[in-house]
Amino acid sequence: MSDLNFEAMPNKLVNYATLDGIAVIELASDAAGAPLTETNDRSPNTYTHEMMSDLDDAIIKARFDDDVSCIVLTGNGSSFFSAGASIQMLNSVSPGFKYNFCLHANETLSRLEQTSKLVVCAINGHAVGGGLEIAMAADIRIARKNSGKVGLPEINLGVLAGTGGTARLTRLIGKAKALEMMVTGELMSFEDAHAHNLINHIWEGDAADFRQDILDWCSQFTLPNKATKAVGNIKRSCQTGPEIPFEYHLALERELQAALFNSNDAKEGIAAYVEKRVANFTGE
Image (tube, rainbow, N blue to C red; front, side):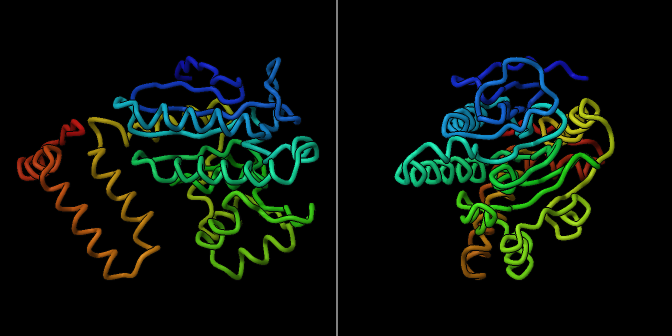
């Protein structure tokens, strides 16, 4: 497996590493949302405000790193991507804190969604509640076969998925299925999630092989393999366009295309096609 030299973010709840143009952001916590004190393949990676702050810092770190073209989001261990928000934490704080906790999580996941770099979520185990909410803010979701389920079971706590869950799930799989899934608290197999376009791919392998396969697959989105400005502009059009009238989306698309036509990578890509060679993109 490729050597990832992780560094812990300030609260020691998120680990961060870069390798060959890919930033890997790993959620890592125990059931109470506290830092792991030892290796634990069953770590649930539940999150607190402190973990969300670490995630925020990691996203910004990757965003400002010019050498990073792709971000991989994953969980520690082999059983959970994330079990969602720490119920112990929610049981101990005021309603005002809970509101601001959700607001900050919304801001963090929007930052992830709006960054110009491609974000791939490697779902290495169960992704439920807030864990699925984090995963849905990624651009592409890839799950490890037979390692877990996905769902938003907040109804069982008498609440809803309040950090983007109702909004993103509805947009991803449609109103009828999303509503049914959330009011029943149903957990969905990876295969069913794939059939509903909630998961892009399901891959076999143990946890180590899965992570290596993710890194290998994501390398196609790094320089010199892909024109990173084009990837970013495609993402911008796909993220923003569906939320505005169609004619405005076409206008946005034209402006994004015009910017790309002025890039060195567009010149290189067109020249390479004409000359029947592999393009060597620089990100310029």
